[in-house]
Amino acid sequence: MAGPLTGVKILDLSAVIAGPMATGLLADQGADVVKVEPIGTGDLCRWLGPNHKGLGAMFAAVNRNKRSIALNLKSAEGKAVLLDLAKTADVFVQNFRPGAIQRMGLGYDVLKALNPRLIYVSMSGFGQDGPYAKRRVYDPVVQAMSGFADSQKDKTTKAPQLIQSIACDKVTALTAAQAITAALFGRVASGEGQHLTLNMLDATIAFLWPDAFYNYALLDNPAPPSPDFADFYGIMKVRDGWITTITLSDDEFGDFCRAVNREDIKADPRFADVFKRMANAAALKAAFAEAVANFTAAEIRAKLEAEDVPHAVVQTRDQVADDPQVVHNAQIVVREHPVAGRLRGVRPAARFGGLPSDERLPAPLLGQQTDDILREIGRSDADIAALRAGGAAA
Image (cartoon, rainbow, N blue to C red; front, side, top):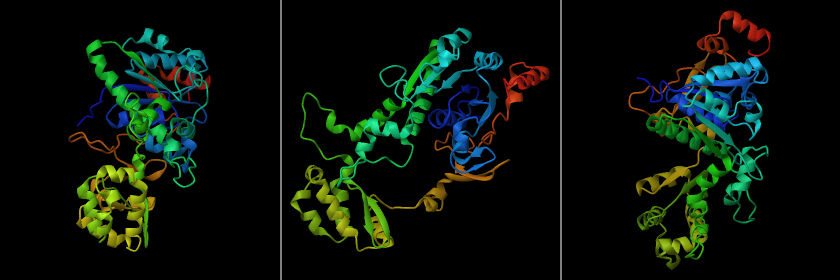
């Protein structure tokens, strides 16, 4: 069964995570993604984390089902190849700093003239213009500026903290993948392409807004500030590990108290209803933590499961692959890479009917499909040899 995006051609000049993860999701859904990389090092992400012969684990996770062509876009010959590729592409994705792609002679107006149906995607850290547009950006910078670090602050010291994952990159990737699909759908009716722009700062603030910013939403009729939503949950120590639980409804709250044999918590007037529990969230968390402290992880899991209380025992990363639900979902898979050997990875999270969830192509080596891609745009073997000899392709 073909993927839902079979027949869509994407020209991907993006690097590191936000852009490549976005196009990787679309590649998983059937799109033909041609990854354009600079000669030499290629995408910097190839060299981040564990690596074998130019294939890094992080790179492999977001670049499966793609083909790689290595081009020198500073050369006239290399740029000419890219323009030829753009003539038949449906989507063009780049995440250079604002202004750089125009200086390369590959801006939207240039490619639109060649291909009016092209969806041209410009991803950036802060936006295409404005006071911070030209700044170099990585995920922790956006975490600090967007309110993410403040939302993770230590409740005792009030020190802001960075979440230990490149969450802003990945949120931007998800936003971009959805927007690209919407633009492709819109093109069916209009027949025209468009310039789609998005940035990490906007995507992250939008992601945080529903819960982390709810105290900043009501301007005309402000209510007393509510505790942060995150105050209603946390990690609690048990005798041999850690657990988390969250009880929003009255029934869930009562079920938790019954599970841990603490009817006194349920009877406490500070926690009489959801509004009072919200107002006294810190005290409630402390009471819950004290209530579970003397149980083992297995004991508290059994009790909370019996009462249908939302909960989880905290698992280390090396335990996740063996979790019974993860195993049942077949989310983590092992594939054979022709160069790196066995690679543990994940299948696409969304399933489309009977679409096989395995990869069509392993993550490519730098320039692995250069010759094949050049032949597809009509370059002869002699042309390809000349491009290689002149340093325009590799």
